Length: 463
Image 1 (tube, one colour):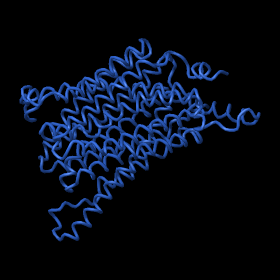
Image 2 (image 1 turned 135 degrees about the horizontal axis):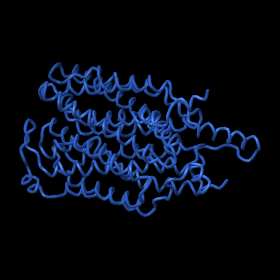
Image 3 (image 1 turned 90 degrees about the vertical axis):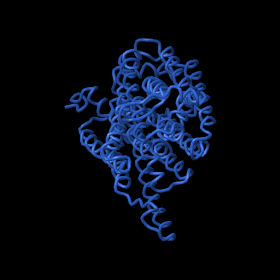
Image 4 (image 1 turned 120 degrees about the vertical axis):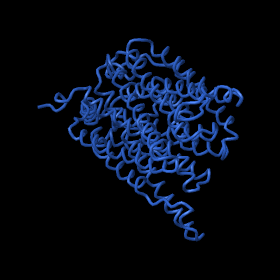
C-alpha cells in the first residue's frame, strides 16, 4: 500500500508545523531568559551578543539550514526530518543541565574566571547545537508542507506553520511569566531552565510522530525525472549550482529583499525584545514576557484571520503591502520621545506599570509576524523553485537571513549600550530595514496563487 495515501495532507502539515513551535519557542525561551543569564553570569555586552548570534535565531540555524537543504534534496525530506530533532534534544541538555556558576559562589579570582568560562562555553555550545538542528528542521518541514499541500489551499497549509510559530513563543512566555510569579523574581532563572526543558519533551513527542510520516511525493517524482535526464545526457546534475542561473538569481535577490532584510529587524524582535523592554522601559522580566505574549497571540490571530483564509483568494500583493506597513509603524513608535511613553503608562494587576505604547508595539509586530514577510517567504520560496533544488534554495536564503541577523543582533546590544541609552539609533535601523522589505515585496510579488507547483515550474523554466 502507498504510505502517502495513509496519511492525510493536514496530518502531515500539523506534524511538520510543530517544527515552528520548537524553533520559535527556542528563540523566545532564550530571549525571555537573556537578561537573567546576563546578570547571573555577569556577562559583558559582547558575550550577550555572541550568544544571540550563535542561537537558533541566527548563525546556528543558518548553518543548519544550508546543510539541511542540501541533504533534503539529495536524500529526501524525511531523512533530515527523522534525525535532526535528536540533535536538538542533545543540545538542549547542555542548557537545561549545564554548569553555570555565578561570581557569588566561587570567590577565588582564578577559579571563578575558569568556572565562568566553562559555564559560558557549555551554554554557548547548547545554543549553537539547537540552532543547527532547528535550521535543518525548518527547511525540511516547510518544504514538505508546501509540496504536500493542495494547490488551491497552499497558503492555508503553509500558514499552519506560522500559527505554531506564534503558539510556541506564547506558551514559552506564559510559562516564564507564571514561573517567575510563582517562584519569585529571585528564582526566575530556574523558571527559564524549566521552560527550556519543556521544549525537550515536545521535541521528543514530535520525533515519535514523525517516524510514521511518508516521504514527499513531489521530491520522489523529481528524483525520477532527474535520473532520466542525467541518463539521457540532457543534464549532468541539478542542484544548488542552478540557483545562480539568471532566472533563479533574480528570485534569490527578491527573496533576500523580502525576508533577509526584514529578518534583521524581526530577528532583533524575536531574540531581544524582552531585553529591550527591560533595558529601555525599565520594566520587570515577567512584564516584558507578558508583553511579548501579546505579540505572539496577535501573530496567531493574524495568521488565522488574514493569511490562511485570504492568501489563496485575495491579491497577495495587497495583503503583503498592508501587513508589512504595520512593522514599519511598530518600530517607528520606539523613536517617540520618552515623555510620551511616561504619559501612556498604566498600572496592571500583578504585573506593575507598563506604557500603553509597548502594548501597541507588541500588537502591530504580532500582526506582521503572522501574515507578513515570513509567511510569504515560506510560500514563495517553495513555489518559485523546482523540487530538484527547492530545499537547497530555501536553505541558502535562510542561511543568508540567519547568518546576517546573527551578525546584526551581535551588534544591537553594543549599539544600545548597557542600559539602553542609545537604543534610538538601533531602532532607526530597524525602521529602514522594515521599509525596504515592504517596498521590495510589494513591487515584485509573483502571481502564483492557486497554481500547482508543476504549473509554476513550467511557466518559469518551460517543459
